[in-house]
Length: 115
Image 1 (cartoon, rainbow, N blue to C red):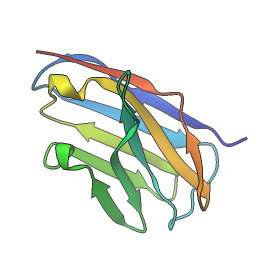
Image 2 (image 1 turned 45 degrees about the vertical axis):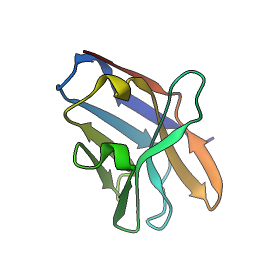
Image 3 (image 1 turned 60 degrees about the horizontal axis):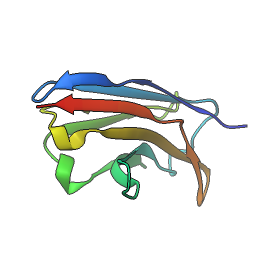
Image 4 (image 1 turned 135 degrees about the vertical axis):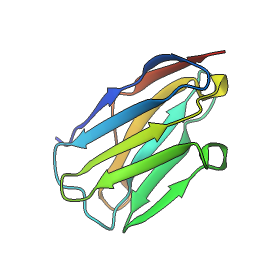
């Protein structure tokens, strides 16, 4: 069974930085996405950033603050989060597709930003 193992996260003050990391237990194809989503209670899970085929996509609300880096050879992805805001507080989920259209999710990792 494919697993995504997340690390990083925690509690920080507004304006500080955190880095999330995720490693897949199998190879994720270059052409398939690997990235990060987040969710707060009562809201839908939303895309934060993802990378595939050498292209990175970002949600508007993180552009200029967050940077995704994917190692296609090792099937790992990281998310560097700078200038964190209280509204970035959420559970962050690593996501990948090992097969087209079939999402795999990590367990989620909490990020808390206090103002």
